[in-house]
Image (spheres, rainbow, N blue to C red):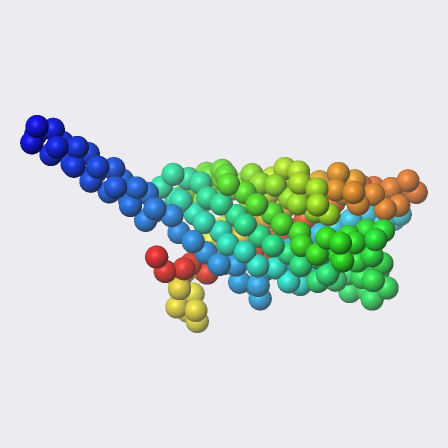
Length: 197
C-alpha cells in the first residue's frame, strides 16, 4: 500500500511539474497603445480613390507559447476614436449609417490560435466583432521582432499584420448599392511589452 501511495504522490508531483512548466513557457504581453495603430483602407466611388483611416485608442493582451508554437490575442478598439483626417467624414462614419459608435462603442479581435513558421508567428486565427457581429478574420503577420527595449527595460515585441474582409459582412454596407466596393484592407502596427511572471 505504501508503494501505491508513493507512486500516486510521485505521479501527482510530476503532473503539477508539467503544468507549471507549461504555464512558465507562456509569455504575456500588454499592448502599448502609444505604438499600436489599427488602420484600414476602403474604396471610394467604385475605384475612384482609397479612403484611409485609423483608430487612435486600443488596448489588449497577447500571449506567446513559443514551446508549443501558439498564442492568443485579445484586443479592444474604441470605435469613436476613428480618424480619417477629415472632420466631416469622421462625423458621418461614426453615425448610424456606418459604425454607429453610440450603439456599438467597442470593436474586438479575439484569437486562441496562431500559426508559426520556425520560432515566429506568421498568422493569427481569430474572430472580429464589429457592430455586434462576429466573424472569423485571419491576420497575416508580415514582420515580427522582439528586443530588449532600452528605455522600457523589458522585452518588447512588435509586428506588422494585415487582413482583408467585406464590410457588408458586418452591417457596414453604406453606399455599396451606389457602386462602392465592399472590400476593406486592415493594416495593424502593434508593439507589446512583456509582463513579469
